Length: 219
Image (cartoon, rainbow, N blue to C red):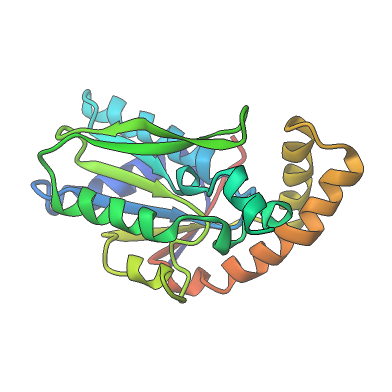
């Protein structure tokens, strides 16, 4: 495992492309993981755009694990809505199946779901992986979780990066995120303490399984 501290987008872009070009004919899956609020989604989006600019083509695309949130109706039926975000509130097998198809089928167009924070539910086929997308950046919390069925993801990624961040900073970001989604200050604090921080501790235990641990500059 390699560790990189205080790196910027240009460094990450160069590192990803260098690894990809070792075997450019093969579709490359990068797993981008880390605790809630670490900046995975922001980094994934910026990295995709940076790679595409550097290559002057749509080579990279982002596929987020969040698209496999169970719907709120499903969570209500399972009495899990208050704990939304824990591993049991995702369609893990659906996520694994999609990534297996992306790895094995480099010719077809593959529709992928995305999570809509306005309606707080996934939207089917919001992202389209096409033949031209040779780098697929997969971002999510549980990519390195060593329990069934999540451990079936092992071997699908060509490389995994763990986005590291300090917990006090993360807590502040998460409270702000929950406030933006309509929660009160009290509700936001409760959500962070009851769900986000226990999740963070679970995910931190997967850090040593990553190929690279990365702490980025503030963007």
